[in-house]
Length: 639
Image (cartoon, rainbow, N blue to C red; front, side, top):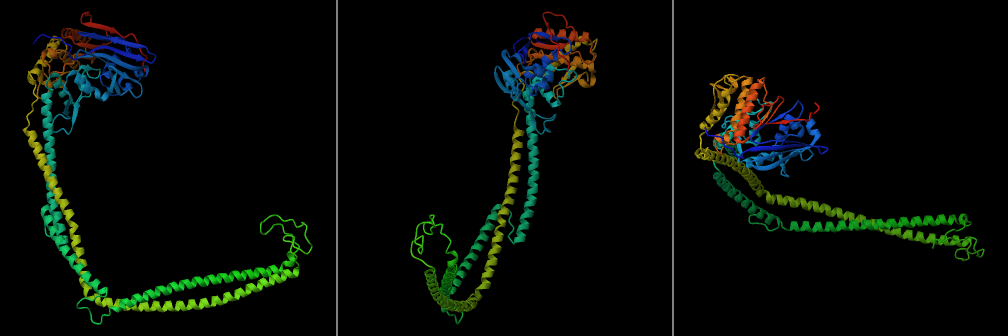
């Protein structure tokens, strides 16, 4: 196995900052090439510091979910200074409304959902979609292999010391391991090809099922339509077009026969008898009917005019009668109203003073001499004139009534004559049109039948088009399956084969575990099957052959091996360069074993130039060149 070499590849955390509401700042600096151990009593923000790093590395949850409500309520923002392949970046998460779902990168903000794409690009790691399932051929969709999927393998929180990652699907674990070991491109390309081929075959099966159903239903539907409407049986869209043209020609011929017959009928009804018209036909009957109709219209207008004239005369008579009555009442009341003073001039409506100077026997309005006898005589003269006018109006009304009765009698006679002529004309026309009626009715029925048949052709075309579309879908699906089957995956792992890569990684784990073979680790050697990336301990899968304490040691060995990925493998591996270990004292494992493991990890970090940040409550091992203790002085109240 080659000697380790150190570079700036991967991630290195330089500083974590927490800003309180009052502006107070808590900062924790870290060094590379060492094991940085956060120590302190309970509730001194050791685990919180790791959660801040995790939150800045793309967690999409709320601050309360990621850091607990107590921490989120006391701070306004958190940030992490880090290097990505040697390039410095500051990642900031603000707790203010509207900015919680964003991550600041050197002052520029992006959505937390886009962070994975950004950091994968910066790290040069593959940004891939993987089939969502253990078997690519049975998966129904793809899911991204995100940065946070891989982060869970080098950020081991308190809940993941007995599993590769907390609540991780097996297909995701296999993809992450193949990414760490450097053959995820070829493995995913093959899986995606299998996925696409399986999807294409499923679509082909669905298309073939639809095609079979459509072919059967098409023949049944077209046969039923043809039998019900008496159409010839057609089997394709072209035959439908031919049948439509034939039926259209037949319909046009029927329309032409009806047009010629209609012209013949119009000639008869217009007074120009055609050859072979019925005997005794009198063309003057129509002219007589027209003349009588005109006379009836004139008589009706005359009746209307006389009615209006009589109404006007009667209105005038009523007006004169009312005037006579008024004059008679006036003459009767002359003496009654003689002593009443006039207060208002009837002409100009000005106020009149009845006490103004005037002769005793004169009117105080116009100053003319008046007496009772003159007023009576004047009223009688006016009454006699009005009665004479009323007598004249009575004579005129009587004459108008006689004229109106005569006009109405004449109108009724003309109306009776018109009805008789209309009946005779209808009888004559019925006699003329009788030979044509049966033919017209037959032509109308034939036209209706042909037009009804024509309405079936669009439905037939749609049925055949559905069959054509289903067949095209089958051909398209078959072509896609053939293309995928002919494709060769060009993405291959450069350098070492997947089997060799798995073997080298397992050897690193075994190197670490060999030191504990006489104490905690009594099992066999670790091996990795490259086909499904199952980790074996001896002859059994790791999760079946190990107890709880041994599992913790197993994952310490797994973390240890990731520190040597760059030196053991090549540029294809996804080299984290960083380990985040939250309280490795798990499952009752002896403190002395953890101390020894941490010393081994610290030496590996120093040798490879990588970085480890761990938390613990116990006193850390003393190794000045490889281990740095960071005491957490601030203690928070428990919620």
